[in-house]
Image 1 (cartoon, rainbow, N blue to C red):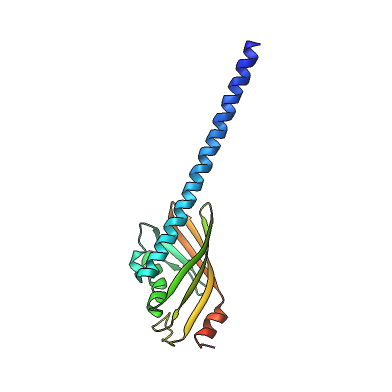
Image 2 (cartoon, rainbow, N blue to C red):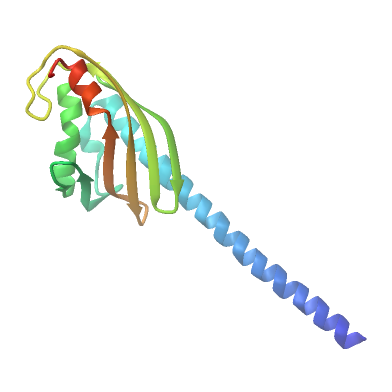
Amino acid sequence: MKNITLIIVSLFFIGCAQNNEEYNQLKADKEYIESNVKMYSDVWNAVFSEKNIDLVTSENFHEDVTVVTSNGDVTGLENFKGYYANYINGFSDGEFTIVHVFSQGDMLVKQWHFKGTHDGDFFGIPATNKQLDLTGTTIVKMKDGKVLQEQDFFDNYTFRSQLGLL
């Protein structure tokens, strides 16, 4: 009887240890995801509130970070910054709001809202002085706690219509 009790108690502790390992892994995964979401949100909120693309640094973005676009990928930290600088330069009063961020593992999905007056050069489009009010979604790939890739999705028809480009 003593041996059976010892075996049962041993199995119980082994089970607890395995569950504890699973719990610790789940907790670590949750903390990693929360850290990614916080860093990502904090950086983009600061970039647009301070109108300073230089807040995008290798501390939070990979040197070979990529923006996937319909015209081809934009790769490298400086090119990435140049791409998104168009939003700051083209809309001096631009307001960028992150509505929601969802994450699983190294993937984030961001729903955003952007509005402002097109009063500067924007991807080669001269200022129209028209108001833009646009919502969209960005899919983000993270790696080792840094942004590796982004791909933006929004209604291009609405965008072009609001700027008077149709």
